[in-house]
Image (cartoon, rainbow, N blue to C red; front, top):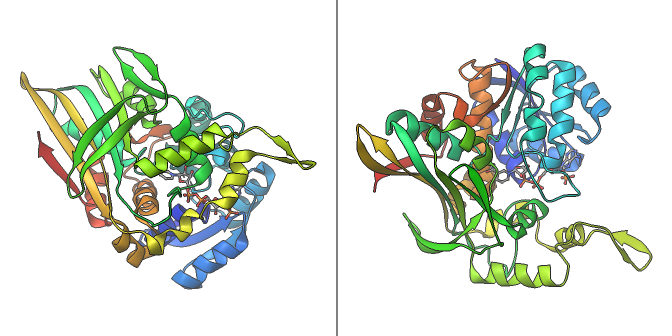
Length: 392
Ligand code: NDP
């Protein structure tokens, strides 16, 4: 029976709290801490004051985090704040000897570049301290990594190519809004694309490569090649891989708005002077855009995220498509959050559950595809994210 500390009370944090409460047989004591206490209070009222404790914390501040962890004495911390807090929370967990999990890799607030280097650098110190960090336990990264490990284990002797395909066909009725943290989302989408082929990274202009994919239960959608973080670990851990790419769907309206905002400098992450004040354009834009957490009640439609893997089995070529379909209105009914938060929060809970049950427990810093995928895949079916396999 585990005592856990969840940090971050945004859209994803909401789902993690609901799902951990649904799995009380594993999570005996739950504390939710975040920067704004009122968001924790709202969630505490929803799930019942007897079910979770709450606290306020600035997760950029290591001594504050250490003091909070020492007072709660959790078995693990679930970092559901922003990627900017990964290193401070990892450091605080190391200092207090507590296991760690997150859903997105570290990103420096001043450069729109995310990579695992600084988190992987904790590996030896985590091993020496006898604690574990599980990186990227969301959907992508997260479930997509587990899908790759699953097809590698059950369908292939060797995988040559993987395409990760992420479609959100949800409609929230706004001309422009992002369905998770706008700053993180827009930084990701407006960056150059990158994919891996024959041992090297190939860079593209933003949105340069487009294909149309027919997503089951949704239909045909324009899908654009982006760089996405799970590729960095998958190229290390999937044997024989010659190419890996990541595609995400975007509608015309989203792309036109984003391009216009970029053209006038509103996606800038450097401070500018405005009437004697210093402001960061992207942060100001975040203030203007709808809070992703408020999209839940208005969003209809579905997400479909999966992988297509090509390779060899018993001397024959094979192509396997494995995916999940998630309905925005159904996830809202269950947790008060739309499907993008749901598909991230459920795997975060599952990762924590497997760690606390000792099923996925190893000292050091780990990516999702390094563990046996079967228990995770079984939990996905049981916890609201069923998956389908097709041979193409
Ligand atoms: P939100 O912006 O909705 O929520 C973030 C929460 O973290 C807010 O409650 C915020 O507090 C809190 N927070 C931010 N900074 C601090 C800080 N310094 N100290 C304490 N708390 C802080 O984001 P989401 O819920 O949409 O996303 C959460 C995470 O999930 C992100 O890392 C995101 O990148 C990741 N993600 C991963 C996906 C995946 O598939 N792997 C997909 C989607 C998201 P406040 O309320 O004060 O703003």
